[in-house]
Length: 344
Image (cartoon, rainbow, N blue to C red; front, side):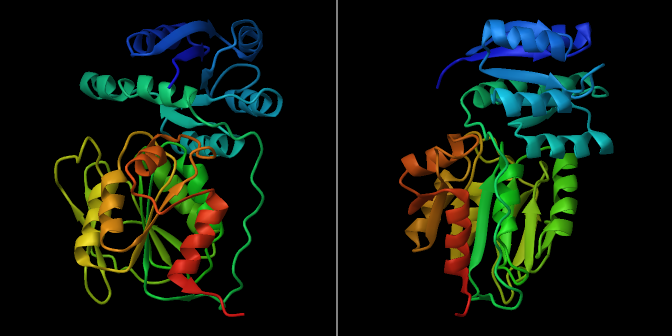
C-alpha cells in the first residue's frame, strides 16, 4: 500500500483548513496542495500529480460534479466527493458514483463535537484507501438479464458484503438479477441516507424488489434485502422461510452491521448459501466467509484487480476463504447459476 498524496478542493477556506488538518494527522496521508475551484484544481493536478483528490460538490463556476466528470473523462484518478446529507446531496452522491467517484464523504455541518470528531476521523482511512483503489475509467455496459419467468431459484440464499465502492458494484450485480431472483441479503457499509437513496433507486430500476432490511422479514425469491443500519447487526433465523433478525450488539472487529456475523449465522444454520465479499475497506467478511466454506458453501471474492477498493476481497482471498475470485459480471453469473437455473 502506498501513501496518499492529496489535493483538497473546496471553495471554503475554512473547510480547506479543516480537512487539511484532519488529513495531516492521518497516518500515511500527506496533503500536497489545495484549490478553491476547478480552474485552480486543474492546474494543481497537472503540477503536483496527486494520487487522490477530495472534491467539494458545491463550488462556484464549474460544480464539483461537472469537474468530476471532466477528470474521469480526461485524466481518471481516485476522487472522494464531499457533500451534505440532504436529499439533494444524496442524489448528487449517487450521480458521483455513476461518474466514477471512489467514495462520497458527508460534510458534518450540524454535528455535535463528538459526532464531528467521529465522522472526520474516518476521512484519513477513506482517502488512503482511495489512493490505493482501482479507478473505473468508463461506464460499464448495461447488464444482460434473464428473461422474465425463465429463472427458477433452487432455495439457495445469496449473501454479499461490501463497503467502499459498493454502490457501484451492487448496481452492476443487481442489474443482472431477474425478477424472480434468489433470496438475497447484503451488508452495505455506507452512510444511512445514501443507502436509503440507493435502495429506492435500485428498487425502481431493477427487475427484482430491493428493500431495506427489517427485523422479521422473510427471505423469499424475488427480493433483495440490504442491511446498512450502523446501530444493528443482521443475522439469519432458520425456518421455512428463513427470516432476517436485526440485533443490537457491540461491533464485531469494528463493524456493525458485520458481514462476518451474517455469514457466520448462515453457516451455523446449515442453510444452502453462496457468499461473496465485494469491494470494500478492511477485512470484514473474511472470517465469516471462511465459516461458510467450512460447511461446504460456495464462497466468492470480487477480483482484486477490478474491485474499486480491493482490501476486503483481498483479505478473503488471503485467508483462503474464497473458492473463486471473479469480476463482477462473472460473479453475478456464478451466483445465479448456483442459486437456480434458466431453462434452455
